Image (tube, rainbow, N blue to C red):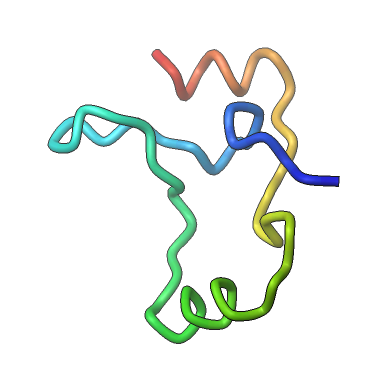
Length: 58
């Protein structure tokens, strides 16, 4: 099952980029492992309830 980032509580709005980005702190090694692993879903996905999703989108 692939997680949809729109429902993840790690999604945060970056005002400089003017878009939502993943707020998980990953170093270059973590990002490379994730990219090369072939893992289909995000291991850092955390399902947010409706209130927490709306709260970080405001």
